[in-house]
Image (tube, rainbow, N blue to C red):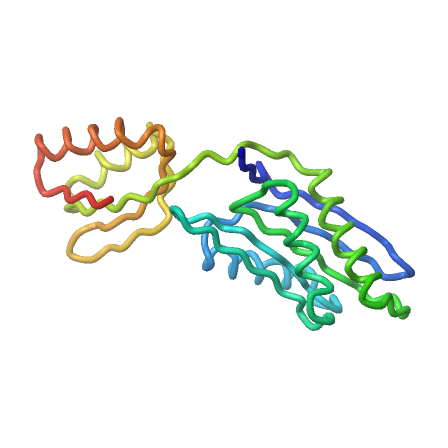
Length: 201
C-alpha cells in the first residue's frame, strides 16, 4: 500500500459550539524534530486551552505512532487525530489541533468529532505527496574531505539528519532506497581515491 506525507505546512480551522479548533499539519522525521515543532506550535498559540497532536514516523522497518490528549479526556482528542492519519495512509507526518475553549463543554463524543474533523479539514487543505521508502546511512570522514562530501550531497539532494564534528565528521543520512546502491558506489569511489571514509548501513 502506498504511503503519503505532507509537502509543506498546511493549516485548517473548525468551529463547534463557540470552541475554535485550529489544525496544523506538517512532515516530521524524528522525535527530536517532533519536540521542536511542538514547541513552535505552543509558541504561536500561547493562550490555547489545549494543544493536542498525533504523529506517525517510519524509521527503517519500525513505525512509531503516538498521540497526546494534552489534558482532554483520555482518547477524545489525540486518538481521533491519529486515526485520521491512519485512514489517509500518512507517515512521517504530524497533525496538531489547537483548541480555544468557548465556554460550552462538548462531551467525549463531541470532542472526538471535533478533533477528528479538524484533522481531516487540514488534510483536505494540504498538498500531499507519495512518501518514498528511506534508508539511513552513516558516513565518517576527515575534515579535508568536507567540501567534496558537501558537493556530493547537494548534487544528489540527500538529507543530512544528524552531524557530529569530533576528530572526524560523522553524519547520518536519509536516502531513497531506490537511490541507495548508486550513492554507495559514489562513496566507495571517493574512498578508493582519498581513503579514510567509513560507511555504515
